[in-house]
Structure formats: C-alpha cells, structure tokens
Image (cartoon, rainbow, N blue to C red; front, side, top):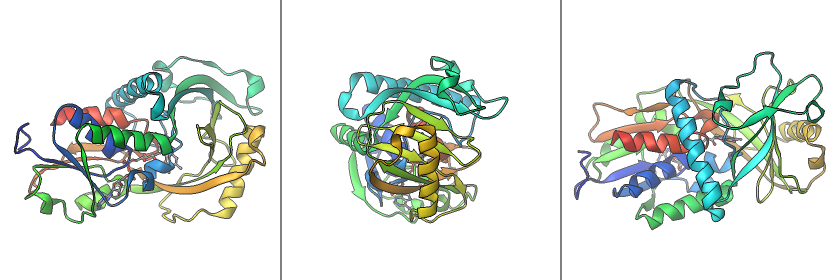
Length: 317
Ligand SMILES: Cc1cc2nc3c(=O)[nH]c(=O)nc-3n(C[C@H](O)[C@H](O)[C@H](O)COP(=O)(O)OP(=O)(O)OC[C@H]3O[C@@H](n4cnc5c(N)ncnc54)[C@H](O)[C@@H]3O)c2cc1C
C-alpha cells in the first residue's frame, strides 16, 4: 500500500482548505486522488475563515513553525503569480495588549512597530504585510486547480473509514472539527465557535487584528468582496446560528478599531466551528483496514497552515 502505481487510490476525506490543499499537492505529484466530502468547499468552516495568514489558536512548536513558514511561502507566491486565486498581500496592524506579546511570527515577515497614533490607547502593535484570501474566490479556485490536475470530487458522507478499504488504498482524514469522531480514537478535538459579520467595503485596504481586546476578540479583514468583521472564540459552543447580540458586540468593537466600517451595509453573516486541538494531528493511524493518515486540528490557523500541512502529508506518502 502507498506505492505510486496503478493500484494506489487515495481518498481525501474533506473539502475544506486542508483537504483541497492536500489533494492539490498529491495530484501535482501525479497521484490518483478523490476528495470525498459531505459539504462542498463553500459550505465548510474554511469558507467562514477571515482568512489571513496569521497564527491563532493552534499548536505552536518547531514542527508547526516549519508549516507556518511553508504556507506563507506558498500563499505569497499565489498572491504574486495567480491574480484570479483571490489571495492578496495586505498591510495592516496586529494590536498587542499584553506586556510580553508573542512576536515569533515576525521572523518570517517584514514588520515594524506600529505608529502609536494608529493604535488603541494603551496598546502596542506591529505593522506587517501578509497574505489574505477572499475565500469565496480562493476555495473555488483551489478546487478548479485540483480538477485540472485530475482530482475527482464526490459528495459523500463517511461514517466508517475502514469501510473504504475495498475501494481505496489510502484515506487521508481532513475532516476538520469532525476528524476525531470519524476516526473514533480521539476525543481531543474541541469546537471553537467563531462568528463573523461581513459588511460592504467602504474602500479600506488595511487589516486590523486585536486578539486580546478586553471587550472580546476583534478583527477587521478587508477582502475583495467585503470586509470580514469578527469575532468570537467560544470553546465547546456548537450553534451555527449567528447570535444578534454577539453581532452587535462585534460591530461595536470593529467600529472602534476602524471607524470607516461603522454603519456599512451588512452583506452576510456566518458562524464556523474551528477544529480546536492542543496539538495538530498529522500522523499515520495504525491498525486500520487501509492506510490512514490524520490531518486535522488546525484550530484558528487552518488557512495559515494549509500548504505546510499539504507538504507534510505528501512527504509521508
Ligand atoms: C470565524 C472564523 C475565522 C477564521 N479565520 C481564520 C483566519 O483568518 N486564518 C486562518 O488561518 N484560519 C482561520 N480560521 C480557521 C479555519 O477556518 C480552520 O482552521 C479551517 O477552516 C479548518 O479547515 P479544515 O479543512 O480542516 O476543515 P473544514 O473547513 O471544516 O472542512 C472539513 C471537511 O470535511 C468534511 N467532512 C467532515 N466529516 C465528514 C464525514 N464524516 N464524511 C464526509 N465528509 C466529512 C466536510 O464536509 C468538509 O468538507 C477561522 C475560523 C473561523 C470559524
């Protein structure tokens, strides 16, 4: 099993940013890949993402650092070479509220201290330029690229990975928040609910992220089609219905951060369940009826870790 050749058939379970990136990476290397998913790319948590390259609510370790860097490199190249992909390099400010903020990420990107005039009172901050994806454009683009490389897509709910053994030689479980339940050997996945509201873009190009805002998480992410305003990070909460009171708080915090967004028409609302896990799970799962590789648990950093994950999984096969 796992040999490249006529008999190898790889199923990727999941059509979010992780499953699509893995499928793309494997198909680029000439492998036969089918994506099996019960939700299409634009129906996934990935479609709710902001989606900025920035580490948030996910494992930090040397292995994950390498994946952060790999993803940054790939997304930058896409931003520069593929104008239709929906990925742009955007400048903006990471607001800091603690005396000893984590600036490890600045080793990979150019950054400078933010002008205090651009910061909330009492905060520090860093100005930087990073990739930001318009997911309504990027996910279809990625799916199209996969299809062009020969990847097949089937809408299908999987409840037993071992039952895939007759049809497939390898299954890659990129099932996001449902990855642990699907494999049945992992109860470490915790949904981290995130709510956003998307408003018309009044002409802003810069992002602001204020993760440690004492009033609650706040971010303003201008995309090609709107501005994404967030957010929340509620571990254990699973309601997919946007909560009006939560939305009012998001609008208020974001308007304080970027006054131009105040009063902009609301384009849409969304809620997603981040696949929270203290450690990413990217490993072979032994003792199954076919070769199984787990690839989930990206928390609030699925886009940020997508290509690094894909490269790592490809390296395992
Ligand atoms: C509000 C919000 C903002 C975010 N902002 C950012 C950001 O700015 N930057 C960033 O990097 N990350 C961000 N994230 C996190 C990011 O969205 C996730 O880490 C990422 O989407 C996880 O991708 P995934 O492919 O693992 O899972 P998902 O996108 O959830 O995809 C899972 C796929 O698996 C399929 N599936 C699952 N179980 C089964 C089954 N049993 N049978 C068949 N199919 C199955 C589903 O149909 C789906 O296709 C944000 C998340 C939220 C909620």
